[in-house]
Length: 188
Image 1 (cartoon, rainbow, N blue to C red):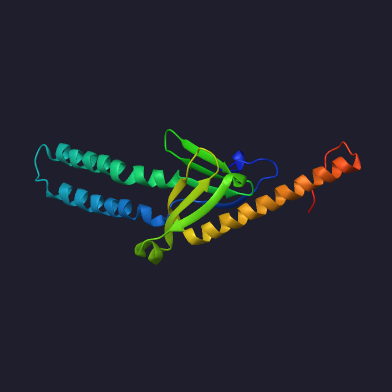
Image 2: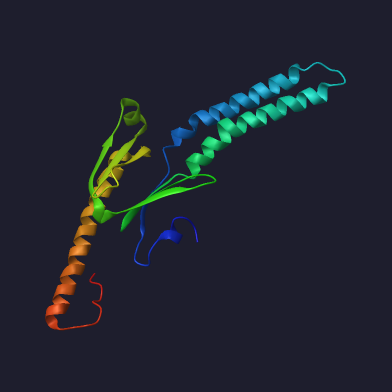
């Protein structure tokens, strides 16, 4: 079972699954291209001699270490950062070797806002701030693609969740007054 499906309840569905904006990996890709170019150029500059192989190996090892630090790690951070909106909650997961996560029920969300710089508007990205009831404080999602659309979607999902809860509550009240003791079938 793929992520995030393994985290869902039986009646829960994924509405939107996001990673940070793709431009967050732009500079790591540029760094990769520069490292390949500089590594090739550096290996070609090494003069012939008995130690040529050793020096070229040093250049390759240095390029690989720099690639891991400046390319692989940022790309893996981007790939392992998940922003998931479901029919009942929002999930945030981040981490390569160790993971951090937060789940917020839609019923606890009190406000959703977004902000965009001029550059964010050009690339259709932004920062999303989610205010919740309780002591958790606000949650900030950065580099969200289509942040204004995600904000509108979250507001819609919060309203839809409130309507669903109200209908369930009304069903339980009606069941109580009818004298029924079994579970109320879902209304669709």
